[in-house]
Amino acid sequence: MKIAITAHGDDCHAEVDSRFGRADYFMLYDTEKESWKAIPNTQNVEAAHGAGIQAGQTLAKSGAGILVTGHVGPKAFKVLAAEKISMFSFGDSNGTVEEVLKAMLAGELKSIDIPSGIGVGK
Amino acid sequence: MIISIASGKGGTGKTTLALLLAATRQNITLVDCDVEEPNCHLFLQPKWQDSGREISVMIPHVHQDLCNGCGACSAVCLFNAIAIAGKSALFFDELCHSCGGCLLACQQGAISEVEKPIGVVNTGMASTLSDVRLLNGTLNIGTPSAVPLIKIMKKEVAGLSGEALLDCPPGTSCSMVTAIKNSDYCLLVTEPNSFGRHDLELAMNITSLLKISTGVVINKSDGDLSDESIQSLCDSRNVPVLAKIPHSISFARQYASGIIPDEFRSVAADIWRQIDSERGGKG
Image (cartoon, rainbow over all chains, first blue to last red):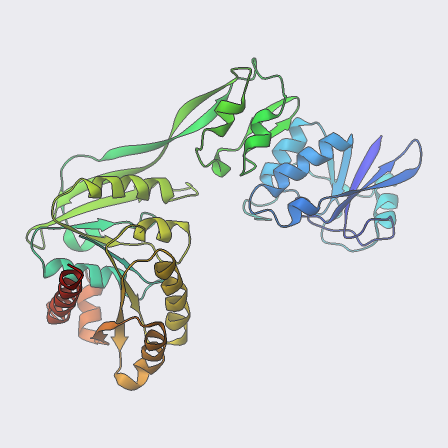
């Protein structure tokens, strides 16, 4: 299973990014190999429209089965749901990617069942 | 002749000026291009010719049974309106600009076009002013872009005889640019304060890019001293200040109750004289 965590930097010590569509990086953790991989999301950070939609597709291509982020907007939610990627939220809390992974594996994070308010992340 | 009335900042008096100009001219069509919040009809109380014409744009419809998820449609879309998710195309109509690119890109015949209603256009003769025709557009709530509706209204204007006044949307974004484009003259209405000046400058940048002859009207004027910052901006840009509409409580009271005041109609008549002489001068 691969777990993607939205982050401001490209390693597991980076701060998490609460945005999904305009996150700087997706840090991808492989639970079997116990290894990290950074996927840049740079082309979406400045996107005028549909950043969440593009990010959703990037994530689908990465093979992630779980997304851990702060908030997921309505359009990204549709894409992720269609791809059957499970979504979990660390809300607005800070911390490093590694700390958030620990919380995720310990079952401390809430699953995201409905998207954030319309217009969030525009 | 098509004269557009724009401002940059909202609430400076576009509709006020449009109504005053309409009141002082024969055989004129007033076009309410502020389709997100049209209000000219409140003052003109027109007798609508019919119940209105519904306006639609074309958007793609994905036939899931024919889609193989190849992603050609998504790759061609500049607005990220199509995603490939769950092995087929997922469409987001609020991002679509109706370009039709995805239709051409799809080799599976999985995309066809359907109509999406975006608003209504009405026409009617004013009952409160003589010889004024109103063309009114109303955008459906939730429709993200006013541009297609304004374009359709402008096509109708191009087919009309006589002169047209376009009451344009505020701001300097796509809807305002669409509204003022190709007009023969643009009147920019401002108010003498920092906000008015700031947005007037943005609006001037647009009319200069579009190469539209421009004149400024200062509304809610408190005299030369208060108008100085607007006047100096206009001087530096070589844009004439055509008129000043004084700040008047009695005018505002009548306007707020839906009446087009008699006050300041001479100011409007003088603006017409200046526009006519500039147009005449150009030959």
